[in-house]
Length: 89
Image (cartoon, rainbow, N blue to C red):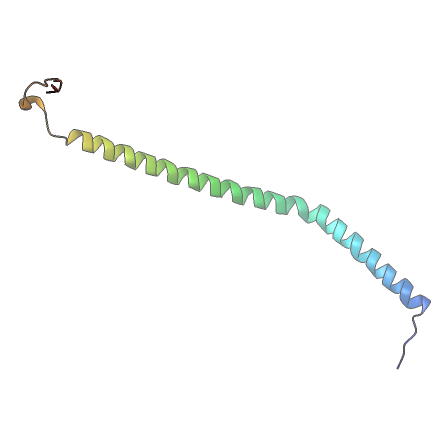
């Protein structure tokens, strides 16, 4: 069965499209700043966590280096360092 398009159906469709456009436009104005603020806060928290983790790792490495420097054997009893040159025959 073939259906014919009517003027009222066309106007209804255009009216619905315009209505949906303005509802979405208003919703974007209302919810847009809230969504943006939420996204910025989430990224800020992620960056702060990464910074804190990096600082912890750096502090741990510093502590390990300090400890290993304290445990190195003393070279005082080994004698004097003598610089020499090789003699070619």
